[in-house]
Length: 292
Image (cartoon, rainbow, N blue to C red; front, side, top):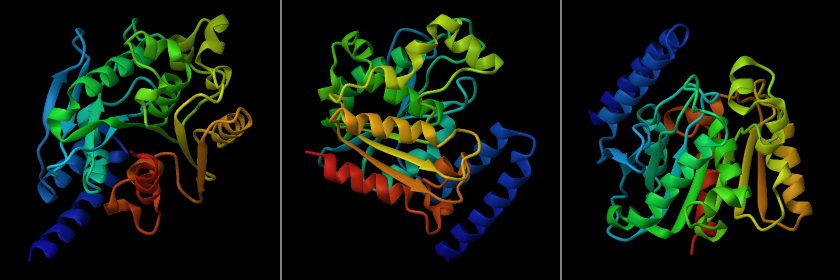
């Protein structure tokens, strides 16, 4: 009976999501996460302050294990202007099913005038500092912290790992990051619309947000994931970053999928959507191989 209920719930969720996604992104995310919460309830500690600013909050999803497990600090995308941590329960749920402790952090976004690069990278550095200091209380291993991000979030976790100044500001180093998982990230591009120009500009500052300007081979292990069918963020971002890391003698793996859209690359983390696509399986393998 439970399996039937979950199946019906999933079908209803998918139908509602398709309806709402045409007009209301926030409502579609709410429907999805509510359904997942009902189908797979688990503990979550919400709105934990990781810094002094009002927006500097995170949610913690502790592993059910009695032993310290690898930690995934997930940074969501949204073109540096959309999204909230609570909208990504589905991503946390995907990693919880694998046994990890998960943290999803918020960061400052446009159109707040303070949301200028590197504000969101600095926010994430503070979130990482909090994780390193406190995650052992939530069944997480502070020695096995992985950064994961999708789209704009992927850019953030890569920049945090590549530009050591952000880590040093929080008394951290690349050794405090066990691995970095970049999902469909725009790592090297020229801002060409209102939001990105406002966030990364003026023009003479653009080189500061290009990950390729920082790679020297000393970065943590990278898993870079993209889809050949992504029409929003070009695959060249992943290809160029991967090639440079390897050229510099760094550690990196690249995984290219077929027929997934930019949004599919994050929704397919969850088994309700994944079908035969192995995004989460590939991440799980990377984390297991990279953990102490």
